[in-house]
Length: 159
Image 1 (spheres, one colour):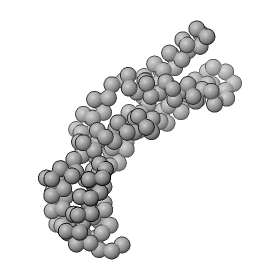
Image 2: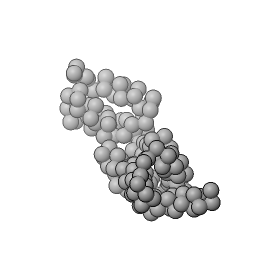
Image 3: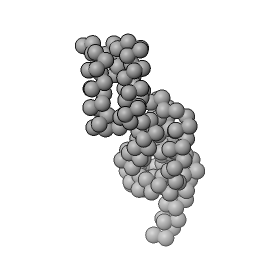
Image 4: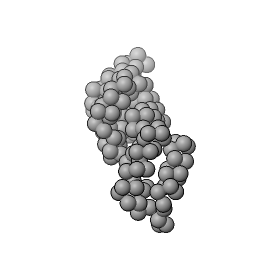
C-alpha cells in the first residue's frame, strides 16, 4: 500500500468520518496500514478528535442502535463487537445501559417466531432448546430469551 503523508492521511480520514461514524481504533488501523509514524498518527488522531470527526461515544451509540435494529443482535454480541473495536469500557456500559429490555424484546420476539416456523423439532422441549441456542448465538441474554419464549407459549395456548 502507498505510504501517505500526515496531511494526506488527515484529509482522507476526515473525509471518511464526514461520510459515516468511525471509532479511533479504525482510524489508527488505517494509519498503521499507510505506515505513518507513531508521532504522526498521534497528531492526526488528536486533530480528528479535537475537530469532532471522531468521537467514540457517538460512534458507539450509532453502532449499538444499528446492530440491534438492523442486524438483530443482542446485548452480548453488541458488547463483544464494541470490545473488538477497542471502545472504552465506560462508554460501552453507558451506551448499552441506555437500551431498555423492551427494545430487545421487540427485536427478539419476531425473530423467534420466524425461527420457530422454519425449525423442525421432535417435541416442544427440543424446539425450545433450539430456539434458545439460536437466540444466544445472536447475543441475547437468557432472561430476555425466557421472557420471549414464555410469551410465545402463552400465545400458542390461546390459538
